[in-house]
Amino acid sequence: MSLPETRLTYAGSALDRLSEQRGDIALVESLRRDARNFVLAGESFLLAKRGDNFDAGLTNDEAAIAGEPLEAALLGKDTSGRGHFARAIPSERIDAIKARGDFIVVDLRSIALQGLVPPEDQSSLATAKALLFWHERHRFCANCGKPTTPAQAGWRRDCAACGANHFPRTDPCVIMLAIDGEQCLLARQTRFPPGMWSALAGFVEPGESIEEAVRRETLEEAGIPAGRVAYFASQPWPFPMSIMIGCFVEAKSNRLKIDEVELEAARWVTKDECKLLLTGKHPARFFAPPPIAIAHHLIKAFVERGASVFD
Image (cartoon, rainbow, N blue to C red; front, side):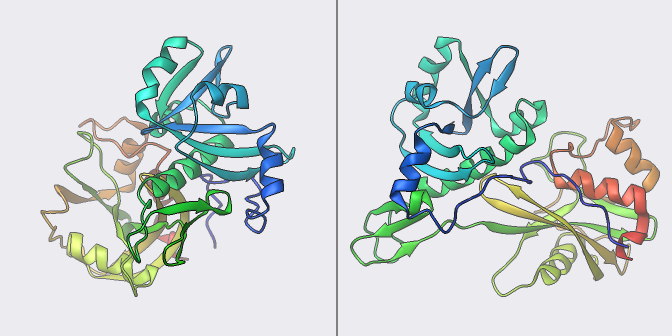
Protein backbone atom coordinates (compact mmCIF):
# COMPACT_ATOMS: atom_id res chain seq x y z
CA MET A 1 0.00 0.00 0.00
CA SER A 2 1.47 3.35 -1.01
CA LEU A 3 1.62 6.26 1.39
CA PRO A 4 -0.66 9.24 0.75
CA GLU A 5 0.91 12.19 -1.02
CA THR A 6 2.34 14.71 1.42
CA ARG A 7 2.27 18.46 0.77
CA LEU A 8 5.73 19.71 1.58
CA THR A 9 6.95 23.28 2.03
CA TYR A 10 8.73 24.74 -1.03
CA ALA A 11 7.20 22.05 -3.29
CA GLY A 12 4.05 22.09 -5.40
CA SER A 13 4.66 24.99 -7.78
CA ALA A 14 1.82 25.65 -10.21
CA LEU A 15 4.00 27.79 -12.49
CA ASP A 16 4.64 26.90 -16.10
CA ARG A 17 8.43 27.09 -16.10
CA LEU A 18 8.52 27.71 -19.89
CA SER A 19 11.70 25.66 -20.13
CA GLU A 20 11.43 25.36 -23.92
CA GLN A 21 10.77 29.10 -24.42
CA ARG A 22 13.41 30.75 -22.25
CA GLY A 23 15.39 31.74 -25.34
CA ASP A 24 12.42 33.62 -26.81
CA ILE A 25 13.49 37.16 -25.98
CA ALA A 26 10.24 38.74 -27.15
CA LEU A 27 8.19 36.40 -24.95
CA VAL A 28 10.39 37.03 -21.91
CA GLU A 29 10.16 40.80 -22.39
CA SER A 30 6.37 40.61 -22.73
CA LEU A 31 6.20 38.73 -19.44
CA ARG A 32 8.19 41.49 -17.72
CA ARG A 33 5.52 44.13 -18.44
CA ASP A 34 3.19 43.12 -15.62
CA ALA A 35 5.35 40.79 -13.59
CA ARG A 36 5.47 39.52 -10.04
CA ASN A 37 9.03 39.97 -8.80
CA PHE A 38 10.62 37.95 -6.00
CA VAL A 39 13.44 40.14 -4.73
CA LEU A 40 16.33 38.62 -2.76
CA ALA A 41 18.72 40.76 -0.73
CA GLY A 42 21.50 38.66 0.76
CA GLU A 43 19.68 35.81 2.53
CA SER A 44 16.32 37.58 2.81
CA PHE A 45 13.38 38.52 0.61
CA LEU A 46 11.45 41.76 0.34
CA LEU A 47 7.75 41.37 1.19
CA ALA A 48 5.30 44.16 0.39
CA LYS A 49 2.72 45.05 3.03
CA ARG A 50 -0.87 44.60 1.80
CA GLY A 51 -2.98 45.71 4.75
CA ASP A 52 -2.57 43.00 7.40
CA ASN A 53 -0.95 40.60 4.91
CA PHE A 54 2.31 40.34 3.00
CA ASP A 55 3.03 39.71 -0.67
CA ALA A 56 6.26 38.17 -1.92
CA GLY A 57 5.46 39.01 -5.54
CA LEU A 58 6.32 42.69 -5.94
CA THR A 59 4.93 44.74 -8.79
CA ASN A 60 7.37 46.24 -11.29
CA ASP A 61 7.06 49.64 -9.58
CA GLU A 62 7.74 48.11 -6.15
CA ALA A 63 10.71 46.14 -7.47
CA ALA A 64 12.10 49.30 -9.06
CA ILE A 65 12.30 50.88 -5.59
CA ALA A 66 14.94 48.26 -4.73
CA GLY A 67 17.06 49.39 -7.68
CA GLU A 68 18.62 47.56 -10.59
CA PRO A 69 19.17 43.85 -9.91
CA LEU A 70 22.55 42.19 -9.84
CA GLU A 71 20.93 39.18 -11.50
CA ALA A 72 17.45 38.40 -12.78
CA ALA A 73 15.82 35.19 -13.96
CA LEU A 74 12.45 34.06 -15.28
CA LEU A 75 10.71 31.66 -12.90
CA GLY A 76 7.75 31.04 -15.23
CA LYS A 77 4.18 32.22 -15.68
CA ASP A 78 1.12 31.56 -13.55
CA THR A 79 -2.30 30.33 -14.67
CA SER A 80 -3.37 33.90 -15.44
CA GLY A 81 -0.40 34.29 -17.79
CA ARG A 82 1.49 36.67 -15.51
CA GLY A 83 5.28 36.39 -15.48
CA HIS A 84 7.19 35.61 -12.31
CA PHE A 85 10.81 36.75 -12.02
CA ALA A 86 13.62 36.40 -9.48
CA ARG A 87 15.77 39.46 -8.79
CA ALA A 88 18.89 39.75 -6.63
CA ILE A 89 19.92 43.08 -5.11
CA PRO A 90 22.89 44.03 -2.90
CA SER A 91 22.21 43.52 0.82
CA GLU A 92 23.47 47.04 1.59
CA ARG A 93 20.22 48.41 0.15
CA ILE A 94 18.12 46.72 2.86
CA ASP A 95 18.24 49.50 5.49
CA ALA A 96 16.95 52.16 3.10
CA ILE A 97 14.14 49.85 1.95
CA LYS A 98 13.13 49.02 5.53
CA ALA A 99 13.04 52.71 6.41
CA ARG A 100 10.22 53.28 3.92
CA GLY A 101 7.78 51.29 6.08
CA ASP A 102 5.94 49.59 3.23
CA PHE A 103 8.20 46.51 3.04
CA ILE A 104 9.59 43.97 5.44
CA VAL A 105 12.75 41.96 4.82
CA VAL A 106 12.57 38.34 6.00
CA ASP A 107 14.67 35.20 5.53
CA LEU A 108 13.13 32.24 3.73
CA ARG A 109 12.96 29.93 6.77
CA SER A 110 11.07 32.54 8.79
CA ILE A 111 8.67 33.18 5.92
CA ALA A 112 7.78 29.48 5.89
CA LEU A 113 7.68 29.01 9.67
CA GLN A 114 5.41 32.01 10.13
CA GLY A 115 3.26 31.27 7.07
CA LEU A 116 3.71 34.82 5.79
CA VAL A 117 2.90 33.95 2.16
CA PRO A 118 0.83 31.22 0.44
CA PRO A 119 2.45 27.82 -0.30
CA GLU A 120 2.67 28.48 -4.05
CA ASP A 121 4.71 31.63 -3.41
CA GLN A 122 6.99 29.74 -1.03
CA SER A 123 7.82 27.46 -3.95
CA SER A 124 8.67 30.48 -6.13
CA LEU A 125 10.83 31.93 -3.37
CA ALA A 126 12.70 28.63 -3.03
CA THR A 127 13.37 28.49 -6.76
CA ALA A 128 14.49 32.10 -6.75
CA LYS A 129 16.88 31.62 -3.84
CA ALA A 130 18.53 28.51 -5.25
CA LEU A 131 18.84 29.97 -8.76
CA LEU A 132 20.20 33.33 -7.63
CA PHE A 133 22.66 31.60 -5.29
CA TRP A 134 23.96 29.64 -8.29
CA HIS A 135 24.42 32.84 -10.32
CA GLU A 136 26.31 34.52 -7.50
CA ARG A 137 28.82 31.66 -7.31
CA HIS A 138 29.25 30.90 -11.01
CA ARG A 139 30.35 34.21 -12.46
CA PHE A 140 33.48 32.60 -13.91
CA CYS A 141 33.84 29.66 -16.24
CA ALA A 142 34.81 26.38 -14.56
CA ASN A 143 36.48 25.36 -17.84
CA CYS A 144 38.77 28.32 -18.56
CA GLY A 145 38.28 30.79 -15.70
CA LYS A 146 36.98 33.67 -17.82
CA PRO A 147 33.83 35.66 -16.89
CA THR A 148 30.44 34.19 -17.84
CA THR A 149 27.22 35.98 -18.78
CA PRO A 150 23.59 34.93 -18.11
CA ALA A 151 21.53 33.47 -20.97
CA GLN A 152 18.22 31.65 -21.48
CA ALA A 153 16.34 34.06 -19.19
CA GLY A 154 18.71 33.30 -16.32
CA TRP A 155 18.82 29.51 -16.66
CA ARG A 156 22.26 29.30 -18.24
CA ARG A 157 25.59 31.08 -18.09
CA ASP A 158 27.76 31.25 -21.18
CA CYS A 159 31.49 31.72 -21.57
CA ALA A 160 32.41 33.80 -24.62
CA ALA A 161 36.07 32.81 -24.29
CA CYS A 162 35.76 29.02 -24.65
CA GLY A 163 32.12 28.55 -25.64
CA ALA A 164 31.16 26.53 -22.56
CA ASN A 165 27.56 26.57 -21.33
CA HIS A 166 26.89 26.23 -17.61
CA PHE A 167 23.55 25.18 -16.12
CA PRO A 168 22.15 25.40 -12.56
CA ARG A 169 22.79 22.39 -10.37
CA THR A 170 20.82 20.84 -7.51
CA ASP A 171 22.60 18.81 -4.84
CA PRO A 172 20.75 15.53 -4.08
CA CYS A 173 20.61 14.71 -0.38
CA VAL A 174 19.03 11.60 1.16
CA ILE A 175 17.20 11.93 4.47
CA MET A 176 16.14 8.63 5.98
CA LEU A 177 14.33 7.27 8.97
CA ALA A 178 15.80 3.95 10.04
CA ILE A 179 13.14 1.59 11.42
CA ASP A 180 13.52 -1.44 13.67
CA GLY A 181 10.09 -2.91 14.27
CA GLU A 182 8.03 -0.37 16.19
CA GLN A 183 10.89 2.03 16.89
CA CYS A 184 12.82 4.47 14.72
CA LEU A 185 16.26 6.01 14.92
CA LEU A 186 16.60 9.74 15.65
CA ALA A 187 19.80 11.70 16.02
CA ARG A 188 21.21 15.10 16.92
CA GLN A 189 23.91 17.22 15.34
CA THR A 190 25.69 19.92 17.34
CA ARG A 191 24.26 22.62 15.04
CA PHE A 192 20.65 21.64 15.92
CA PRO A 193 18.67 23.81 18.34
CA PRO A 194 18.83 22.38 21.88
CA GLY A 195 16.35 19.53 22.25
CA MET A 196 15.70 18.87 18.56
CA TRP A 197 15.98 15.30 17.24
CA SER A 198 15.73 14.40 13.57
CA ALA A 199 16.38 11.76 10.92
CA LEU A 200 19.79 10.92 9.48
CA ALA A 201 20.80 12.68 6.27
CA GLY A 202 23.68 12.96 3.83
CA PHE A 203 24.60 13.86 0.27
CA VAL A 204 24.44 11.38 -2.58
CA GLU A 205 27.93 10.74 -3.93
CA PRO A 206 28.92 10.43 -7.61
CA GLY A 207 28.13 7.01 -9.07
CA GLU A 208 25.75 6.16 -6.22
CA SER A 209 22.06 5.29 -6.32
CA ILE A 210 19.60 6.74 -3.83
CA GLU A 211 19.25 3.34 -2.13
CA GLU A 212 23.01 2.95 -1.89
CA ALA A 213 23.37 6.43 -0.39
CA VAL A 214 20.68 5.68 2.21
CA ARG A 215 22.38 2.47 3.31
CA ARG A 216 25.87 3.99 3.29
CA GLU A 217 24.90 7.03 5.36
CA THR A 218 22.97 4.89 7.86
CA LEU A 219 26.00 2.67 8.34
CA GLU A 220 28.54 5.51 8.44
CA GLU A 221 26.66 7.77 10.82
CA ALA A 222 25.01 5.25 13.16
CA GLY A 223 26.84 1.95 12.54
CA ILE A 224 23.58 0.31 11.46
CA PRO A 225 23.62 -2.13 8.52
CA ALA A 226 20.50 -1.54 6.45
CA GLY A 227 18.18 -3.57 4.24
CA ARG A 228 15.03 -2.47 2.43
CA VAL A 229 14.68 1.15 1.36
CA ALA A 230 11.25 2.70 0.72
CA TYR A 231 10.87 6.06 -0.99
CA PHE A 232 8.61 8.56 0.78
CA ALA A 233 8.74 11.97 -0.93
CA SER A 234 11.14 14.69 -2.05
CA GLN A 235 11.43 18.34 -1.09
CA PRO A 236 13.29 21.27 -2.64
CA TRP A 237 15.52 22.63 0.10
CA PRO A 238 17.10 25.95 -0.94
CA PHE A 239 19.71 26.08 1.83
CA PRO A 240 21.41 26.66 -0.43
CA MET A 241 20.36 24.49 -3.40
CA SER A 242 19.48 20.89 -2.48
CA ILE A 243 16.73 18.36 -3.09
CA MET A 244 15.91 16.28 -0.02
CA ILE A 245 14.99 12.70 -0.97
CA GLY A 246 13.01 11.24 1.91
CA CYS A 247 13.17 7.49 2.54
CA PHE A 248 12.55 4.82 5.15
CA VAL A 249 15.25 2.23 5.66
CA GLU A 250 15.07 -1.15 7.40
CA ALA A 251 17.61 -1.53 10.19
CA LYS A 252 19.34 -4.92 10.29
CA SER A 253 20.60 -4.29 13.83
CA ASN A 254 19.73 -1.93 16.69
CA ARG A 255 23.26 -1.69 18.07
CA LEU A 256 24.48 1.87 17.59
CA LYS A 257 28.01 3.02 16.86
CA ILE A 258 27.71 6.69 16.00
CA ASP A 259 30.15 8.84 14.06
CA GLU A 260 30.96 11.41 16.73
CA VAL A 261 32.20 13.87 14.11
CA GLU A 262 28.82 13.88 12.34
CA LEU A 263 26.50 13.28 15.30
CA GLU A 264 26.23 14.46 18.86
CA ALA A 265 23.92 11.59 19.81
CA ALA A 266 21.51 9.01 18.41
CA ARG A 267 18.89 6.77 19.97
CA TRP A 268 15.93 4.51 19.22
CA VAL A 269 12.54 6.12 19.79
CA THR A 270 9.13 4.45 20.10
CA LYS A 271 6.02 5.61 18.23
CA ASP A 272 4.53 6.97 21.45
CA GLU A 273 7.61 9.07 22.13
CA CYS A 274 7.61 10.26 18.52
CA LYS A 275 4.07 11.58 19.06
CA LEU A 276 5.33 13.63 21.99
CA LEU A 277 8.20 14.97 19.88
CA LEU A 278 5.82 15.97 17.08
CA THR A 279 3.36 17.71 19.39
CA GLY A 280 5.92 19.45 21.60
CA LYS A 281 4.72 17.60 24.70
CA HIS A 282 7.86 15.62 25.48
CA PRO A 283 8.63 15.76 29.24
CA ALA A 284 12.31 16.47 28.53
CA ARG A 285 11.35 19.29 26.14
CA PHE A 286 12.70 17.35 23.19
CA PHE A 287 11.02 18.04 19.85
CA ALA A 288 11.00 17.04 16.18
CA PRO A 289 11.78 19.38 13.28
CA PRO A 290 8.88 21.70 12.35
CA PRO A 291 6.39 20.82 9.59
CA ILE A 292 8.34 22.85 7.01
CA ALA A 293 10.98 20.05 7.04
CA ILE A 294 10.50 16.67 5.38
CA ALA A 295 11.96 15.03 8.53
CA HIS A 296 8.78 16.01 10.40
CA HIS A 297 6.66 14.17 7.85
CA LEU A 298 8.88 11.08 7.85
CA ILE A 299 8.44 10.80 11.62
CA LYS A 300 4.70 11.49 11.36
CA ALA A 301 4.25 8.77 8.72
CA PHE A 302 6.11 6.30 10.95
CA VAL A 303 3.80 7.15 13.88
CA GLU A 304 0.78 6.56 11.66
CA ARG A 305 2.01 3.48 9.79
CA GLY A 306 4.84 1.91 11.75
CA ALA A 307 6.85 -0.71 9.86
CA SER A 308 4.07 -0.97 7.25
CA VAL A 309 5.73 1.95 5.44
CA PHE A 310 7.70 -0.77 3.63
CA ASP A 311 4.56 -2.56 2.38
